[in-house]
Amino acid sequence: MSLLEVTDLAVHFGGVKAVDGVSFKVEEGEVFSIIGPNGAGKSTIFNLISRFYEPTRGKIRFDEAELTALAPHQVADLGIARTFQNIELFDHSTVLDNLLMGRHRHRATHWVQDLLFLPKVRAEERAHRQKVEEVMEFLELEAYRDKMIAGLPYGVRKVVEIGRALAMGPKMILLDEPASGLSVEESQDVAYWIEDMRRDMGLSVLMVEHDMRLVTQVSDRVLAVANGKPLALGSPAEVQSDPEVQAAYLGTATAEDVA
Image 1 (cartoon, rainbow, N blue to C red):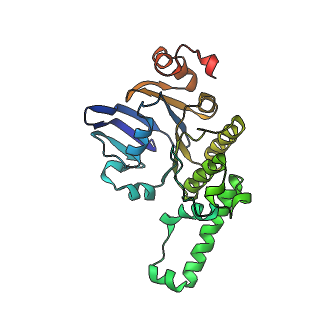
Image 2: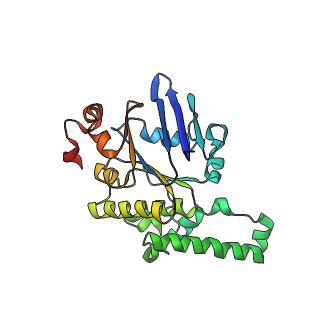
Image 3: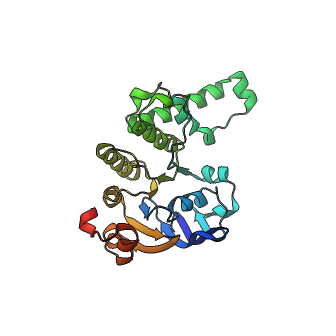
């Protein structure tokens, strides 16, 4: 059974059909990418899965749970973490504090216990910090542990947002344009991390991305969308060579030109 199954998903804003009849499945341990031109509905699909938007029709099933029946915080509790196209961090907090925010769903103590800072609270705090330290080591963020977000370079902040999502301990991570605004070297680091997320952490990855080199390097399968509608689904090479995809997204370029 697929980990995530999206069936005939649609959302209409007035007369605008932002997403219209999109269906796909993501298997456990798979890296699945969604590509398309600006305004194609890619991030809207993420917002529907995250329950920021209410679908006009369709179903979204994750690990046997119907997401359309849940509130946004319940989606996170199921094990879905995400990053955002526009970085959403707490600028006046440290990297450590931002990553600890990702541990919120795992808190099991009562506010009275927290107030008294009882042994159970201290033990839980140590466990959360250990998990965050592991994430910082994985993403090579140790040097920025106590730095304020507001003073960090853009590329580092992008990595911190990925770290906060990983700190949640998810089953699936949704990456919304993780390479946007990054240098070639930074984008290559993202590719390595995605491969390690799958291999070492056992995560499934659903990614929206414009960088076709990154998509080709890490993706098992790719869904191309345009104007809210699906165009092609298959391997990166199959999708890039599809005439409709080339016309809508890749222009007249060939698969070799963008690989």
